[in-house]
Length: 389
Picture 1 (cartoon, rainbow, N blue to C red):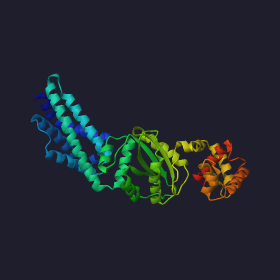
Picture 2 (spheres, rainbow, N blue to C red):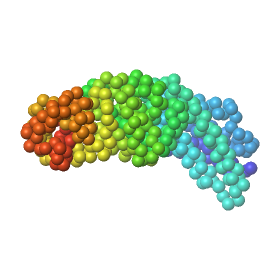
Picture 3 (cartoon, one colour):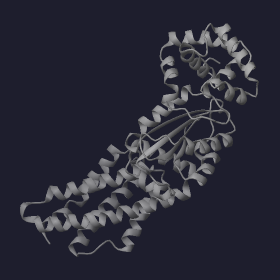
């Protein structure tokens, strides 16, 4: 082998400097680290070594040795210890591969076909081995450096961003990824701010049992991603026990919003679940999971202030009567079946009838009419969500 490899060897130093400039331009974490002259010199030395060593190995038809792979893994470990995010580590590998292939293409000429094919074949096979060892070193250091809660937070971030490094971190955590997800957003209105949610014992305890992506997205918001077979599936029966378990452990009332969608549209699915959670009823231990079909009226009300104010006046009159809100909630959740509702409320059916008449008296709306159902279900839902507290 001659011309192409010789030219790559001559350009090794210049190409390494160009690679470092690209890292600093594209990756903020590298830019910060490169401000330290010693760190920048170390990164440049590694970039030069890799290019020169690649030419030497291809010329001699040798693979990366175990010593080479250990060295590459050590670089990955150092990046983790320096605080590089999983996304940044993955993007470094992708950018490195792109730049190396561009460098090869720039020096290739028409009569270099055999060399070009041999070099690209070597780079494809050995690049995969080197990248794998780099990530192994990185993730091994992350296991020692970061809590499970923090790594789960990183995994959720990567899944929402559609980052290609998500599968590697998921595998390292023992999480199975899926084509569709059931996003569960739990909002805890009374949760105090300023807690270190990344290392919260609640996240780790839930993960140990269910092995699903789960993370605090805000001080008062917990996101859990459960597997779903299709965008239409709403596995409430499977999800409710998990949600109840989380709520009991969190020891605080919460609103729960759910939505189902493909992994490719996970941000939109989570956003919808978050919007549902904003208007879902506050429950100490959740007995229902609200989806868009359960709260679309309330979502519409929230977005029209005049309607919200009008409904608030209706709710104020309703709340003035003792037990009327609870009675209507149970009555509607039992599909207006008097006997089932009375049993659930632990009252006589005649007492239920009296309360329903009282609702009609204070609001001027018959709770059993079509109009009453539309108005009073929305008013009760807003009251239970604590909208006007």
